[in-house]
Amino acid sequence: MSLRESRFILGIILPVFYEITLIQSYLFFTQNEVQLFLFLPGIIFIFPVYFVYIYSPYLIYRLSGVNQVYSEALIKNIDEIFLLKDIDLDPVLLKQLHTSIQDELIPELLKLFRRGYIDSFFIREEHVANQRMLSFREVLFLLSLSFGLINFLNLLIILYLAFNSIDFDFFYMDQITTPINVIIFALLFLSLTFLSFVLFRHTRRQLQHLIQLTSYNLSSTSDIENLRVKTRNLELDSIRRFPLVDKIGSKLASNWDLVAKLYLEFIEAHIKEELHDFSRKEITRSLVLEQYSSMLNHLDLPPKKKKELELQFYLGQGVTDAIEEIVDSEEETESIKIDILYARKKLEIWDEISNDEHISTFLFSWRSIEGLFRNLLWKRSVYPKEDQSWPSIVDTLLREKLLTTQENRTLKKIRLRRNAMLHRSQDRYISREDLEELLNILQSVLDRS
Image (cartoon, rainbow, N blue to C red; front, side, top):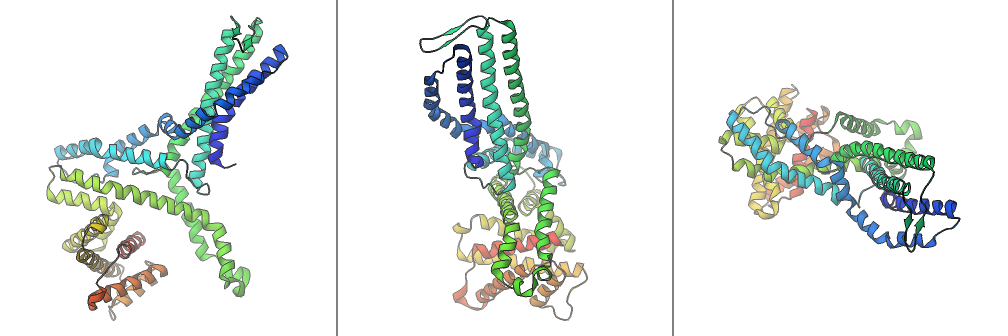
């Protein structure tokens, strides 16, 4: 039984049949009979119960309080998330910017966050650790909620039976005349209700954390999750250094089918989780960029400050800091950042702009990346002074482990496209994928620098 099925069967169906079985047991011991018709409501209620299950992501999202937790995290860390911490702004403008973010941007982020959770509720991949754990916690959350409500209802029934019988045409339960029995049953159902409440509170806190990890989240994650990501990356990196030839011999190691089977068995879940985390962050960032720029346009910010905020948010604080550290010239630094910002913005509307704009965007980006790579090698005192050609620069980046072999292959492919575009008029075409790969390589090199 999958976790998706468990949410329905254990979280909702099981408590209903628990109640029916409980009543049947009571009737059997007190009246020595079994009321078979009591199973009929259970069957009839399958459809309403299934409707509750369909609505359960909305119910979980609201009752878990994750929306409030995420909203508070955005507001609490507003300067760090929206990169205002190191910007020298007039206090009046800074307050205006805070108000605009809270009134315009954060509501959009909350809608995106809610959609990211609810849309994925029925289509999660159980081999992705965080998604599997989230589904398991949802089972416990629904179970604690339904089980708690049913046992609280049973407590009320016991208290009612202490004074009156329940007498319907089709159903009869005797009054409980022995006080000790009332106390025992009342304490039993009170204990079960309390345990359900404890489980509800505990699972609620875990859900708040897990939903933030698996939905579209612009706020920072916890130190525990950062540690988990680092551990996962170290495990993946260990595969590259594993002495496979020493363990199974060169003949077996050269058998790609065997190697693929051995490696994929270990890394498949890690890779899928890594891809999920990466795509979630990229989707969140790309969806909020347009709204962020639109908001800045409505504010009375100095052009320089507006450009600085856009650069930091589009490129990320890490990228802008790395560029400033690598390039000594302030003019060249600004030029590189603007070129990359221009490329990021054009990628958002790639299908709406002309082929000439595609080409100019790519050439601006290539020029900036080439200049940045040269400056990076200068900074590390490994610049190839005798041979300053592009292949020599790339070879040096490879030796310095700033570039991977796969990234080198990708750069060669893109460079061939660039040369063909410059020297052959019939090949004046560049794809979105080429530009995205080029910018991703830049990001990777800067991360390693």
